[in-house]
Amino acid sequence: MNFNKAKDRIKIIGAGLAGSEAAIFLLERGYLLDIYEMRPAIKTPVHKTDLFAELVCSNSLGNKDIISASGLLKEEIKILGSNLIRIAEDCSVEAGQALAVDREKFSKCVTDKIISNSNVNVFREEIKSIPEDSFAIVATGPLTSESLFNYFKNSLNSKDLYFYDATSPIVKYDSIDLKHAFWGNRYGKGEGAYLNCPMTKDEYDFFYEELIKADRVRSHLPDEERYFEGCMPIEELAKRGRETLLFGPLKPRGLKDPNTNKEPYCVVQLRAENKDKTLFNIVGFQTRLTFKEQSRIFRLIPALKNAEFVRYGVMHKNVYFNSSTLIKENLESKKFNNVFFAGQIIGTEGYVEAIATGLLAAINLHLKIHDKGYLALPKTTILGSLINHIINVATDKPAPMNASFGLLPPLLEKLNKKRRYEEYVKRSLYDLNRYLSDFQYKL
Ligand SMILES: Cc1cc2nc3c(=O)[nH]c(=O)nc-3n(C[C@H](O)[C@H](O)[C@H](O)COP(=O)(O)OP(=O)(O)OC[C@H]3O[C@@H](n4cnc5c(N)ncnc54)[C@H](O)[C@@H]3O)c2cc1C
Image 1 (cartoon, rainbow, N blue to C red):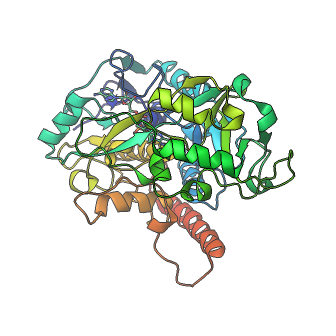
Image 2 (image 1 turned 90 degrees about the vertical axis):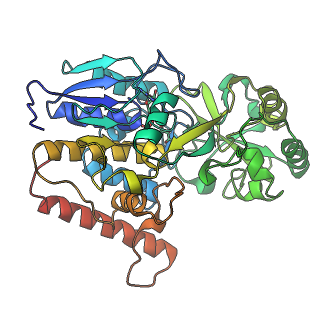
Image 3 (image 1 turned 135 degrees about the vertical axis):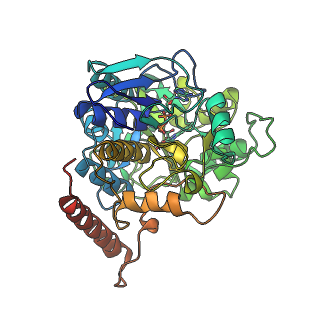
């Protein structure tokens, strides 16, 4: 296709995290864009606003520490020019080691940055098939509209892959009983950003017994139990055993309750949702309990006994497809020339992963227009290893994948975990910088 930058328009389908990152990259290089976003005309079961790049659940973009898979992924995409990570840093709220943002401010900044550009047309409409007449990035996410996903299944011969994912509740700060809560981060790391709600053994035992027998929202689907391990509903996690929560989200390690001067038996952690700290998310409490049961059982936590819920946790079906059969290493469709896919629909999982693949799809589309090849990131980088995993996955029913040190090629030397992670980070950044400086085209 002969592309004329002065008059040909690129289509972006879906202005979520991946689509918005892709849009800003292309706008900065002077392209004309048509963005198709179905909200608010057609709603998803989870999004609450008509803003671009809405965070549907937690307001955290993961660990800031570079010696972690999520921290390294953020660093890599900053090197590649990510705008959304920079905006997230500008909109951050205190959250210890995590990069958490004021969710509304973040999405508003991203939306304003895109719609204030005169090269953009925004169409608030649902797309039901893949455009074949122009360059396009499809980034419709895990809640892709049904008609478009059915179209994918038929035209791409894609299997129906999906899993269930849940969101956690949000409570009002002024409804929290601060006599039963204290500020602090595990092991004193960071600036005491979490509001910790301790429970004694008796309180936990009662809470636990009520949690495992609570009413859940029923689904008519036969295989409703297909969850993503990293976002397991709290009640499902609890069913694995009484101790599971104590070693998971309710772990008290590294915290001292100033009321007793001791480590509590367990703690529920709350993290600020906005800069003004008027709203707090119950960390790790994604759930599919009925709303009535959420208010009854979560109010058994002493600090939350009068909690006012501004949002209850909900559970949703997430769709994605098997990228190994459908897309190439540059994220371009095998079937439709010039159509790139990005975000969670390609089988990655997580906010930063969606941003990262949005950026990569935009870079590769830009390179394709200029006939300059594509970025094949070293597999020693977190992003390169994630793309390698979803493109070359061995099974025909892959599970969605987060960035993980486990995807990286092993080191030659045998090292303890801490040293091994440090070496992964050093190797990744060295290889990425060398690869980019050798790449024949300046992005
Ligand atoms: C319930 C739930 C909870 C999650 N919680 C977390 C979490 O806490 N932390 C985390 O890291 N990740 C979480 N995720 C996973 C994932 O990171 C997010 O879903 C992320 O937003 C994916 O980014 P995306 O750009 O692929 O899709 P989205 O951000 O969802 O963007 C897709 C956009 O496409 C639009 N769209 C869909 N179909 C069409 C169509 N046919 N035409 C036009 N527009 C369309 C949608 O309205 C949406 O705006 C969660 C996912 C779900 C569903």
